[in-house]
Length: 181
Image (tube, rainbow, N blue to C red; front, side, top):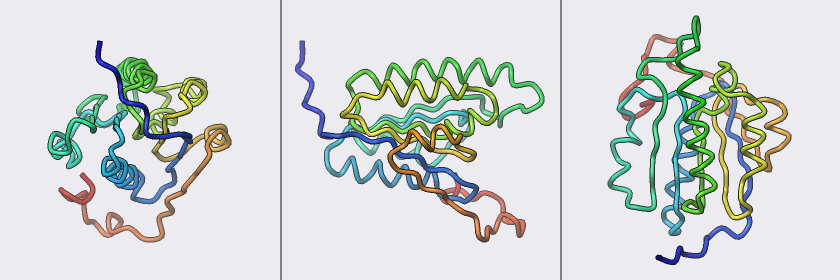
């Protein structure tokens, strides 16, 4: 049996990136690059992002074995009229994410768009709080997405709110390859 390396994070914290502005996933990806540069093992677990391909998916293999990206959800956006299938997929993804976070294989674990999954009713707030409480002390946990619940904000060690001041989308410029996806 191979011996796992000692975790590089001595004291992990819980970070939340929320708000209506652009940049939550981008900030988490930037943190991932910083962590990889220091030899940390990173899992970037994406909820409700079964479509794509997103730029982070396309580069993942080139970032080396310390970076794993897991994409979950339907290829289309969440069906807000009937969330049955989206909720089933999100519940399966949540179990997978929790197991991965607890595996000891990662120093930095990012749950991208988990806050959005909660606000759509795909994952229960209690499950996210359970995930936070189950986090090993040596794992940095990052939760992204709009509409973070107040209880998640209170449970976090760091909260950053991205505030939209102005966005070109409102001027008719759609999501662009390499910038938003």
